Length: 403
Image (tube, rainbow, N blue to C red; front, side, top):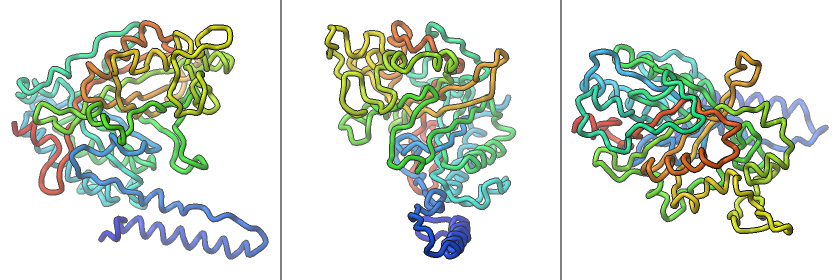
């Protein structure tokens, strides 16, 4: 049973937590004035609607945790097998985002948790079309990404027939969803690669702030915003028909050379990025959200934002208006054989067309962005993000698989 947008198990967990808080407050009496804090159940009970023209996990606020996984179809798995799988996945996700059990494979990993803003976003890779007899329906936008200077792509951790982005504000909730979907795929598709990432937990700062990456830089200031008049044109695809309302997603696993970066003085880091590290404001002045003034000069005549600064080279004005909605997460996977951190960014960028989003920007960055000397692109993928589904019997990918 569900109550006012909450799952039963979220309400039960919240009631227990509430009693504990009350007992503690009574023991303290009036000796100490303790400011009231938002109740933890609010985080767990937060729910994102699964249904709509667009899939969830694109325009919603970024969650604290993410699980990414790509699947390859099993030998002999045909279009009907994929249809059955995506029907099952769709039904399972409908339950999981409500905080309800995940069906016959329920393993109780997140039994006492609420939805925790869970979203599951499904996309398909170019290789799926040939394997399912849908080659004629593969859009040209899914042509392989070109190689870029300094790429070190491991193909075993790249690409895939199916791709899942699973976000939640609790790590167990995200992993639980992945395990449910992975088990349901048995016999039809197997995991090709998997990655886990993290971002700032909601409530960790006194007021909402743009997240920082592992270099300590505010990351995502200039993202397109849903309130922008041209937001949909930048982010969502209009065709082919089966993809209308969907998007294209570029994934890159980007290792940061943190030892080298952290050896630089802060002012050097700021000139490389083009923003103040403390507050994210552009070096041309103002606050984080102040539009960067690329023409502004210092008193000595030098550019306030250096010619090779990241924000100058990545600016839409320098790339024919190219823009994408970045929704990246940090990752930390221990250390490498040389003792350096195996850590960096799981780059995720949604766009209406990679030819007018990721590609022109990455070409510019690879030619002149000094920040690239501190980065290594080690995995890559390009996927078509399926449109959402209306409330009813529809399933993700129906328009494509029944074409």
